Image (cartoon, rainbow, N blue to C red; front, side):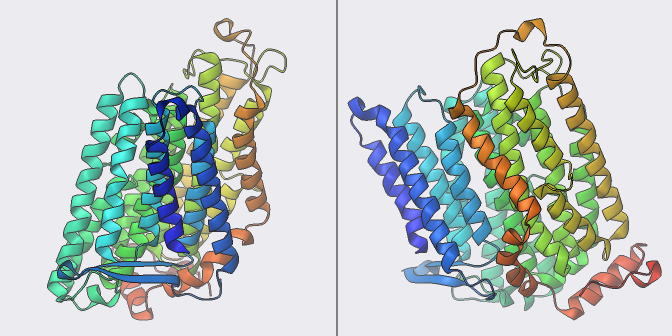
Length: 511
């Protein structure tokens, strides 16, 4: 069942690639059918998934290259299942939202399907080297999608993206090789006990390589500079995938391989990671306030929201770890919605400049439905109750406060700052009198509205009924929790770092 999710898109990409030029315009239809089939198959997988089981399900194992210790080992659990669904859904939306008259359509849609397959493979891989192969393969289609179909500075943005993320892959591979070599393992199969038998100094070095490698991918400050450039130059469908799915490879890697392989070392560095999260949240939010480009503002908001996930993983409490997974899903949906809406505004007005746009909520000559959906999207991003963003952020703060109250309170400032910069965007762009530069806008067709409406409905439904998300991951995240001895070590380190212990502030750990 799992291999189907990987190789059907690859087969679809091959079919599109060999189409004759006379049938090039059918590439979009073929790609969309394949993407929908993969999404439906992932829903079937979810329907058969046993949410009460913490271990891997639907596992597939096939020896591949014995001399390297490489195996084709796939499996899915409550950590990877929601991300698979998100990847499949946003791929459908990206293909549907792509320009029907796009140049070189066969190449474009084949790259989108390969990107989908590689990301799916990374979420399913249970072999360290296999994960790395999928992790690196996705760089190629994404680089080409930015470099060929991007904006005026697409070459610069694509090259910068490639250099940063290639460095990320090198660090991750070095950590995996070091782990297998120093532990004298006979294969690269994912085994959590491998890291725990190593000396603590070695664990810290390997964990440090993973932290920087996945920190570049998320991205965290100061490794974030590639993301705003990539978003600004990428087309709208690629921005949807980049923010909605690809950044989650970094957060997924931190949980699966950072916390999963090195829980003792994680307890030592966790207070510093919580502080790192504060820096990313505050820095990303302040930079978003300073932007005049709508797309760049949304890009910097992603940097801030990735900091929430790092805080949750650093705390590693029963609630915070579950909240980290929920924040991945909610950010994927919300950021995809915001980038879609910004794309529609740019398509109809020809600009994303906040200083130029005014009054787009005008019911007669503006974009009233797009403006209304934008208001909903920014409310969800700011954590307004009734939206999925509120559920995930509230649980992040509630679960992290018991471990790191100071850092949690500082990260909560990011929610206020999110409201500030998105309020500036909505107030300037959508309210007031319609600016002369964008009068008599062309009508927004329903084809441009449908993807945004689907995401908006999901954001509200999952906000009202969060158990539809929670039930799939709760058992798995509970099994990933550090042992009591590791928790005690973390609390002792936090206390020595002048962070108030739980008993000092009258809070008992949530059971």
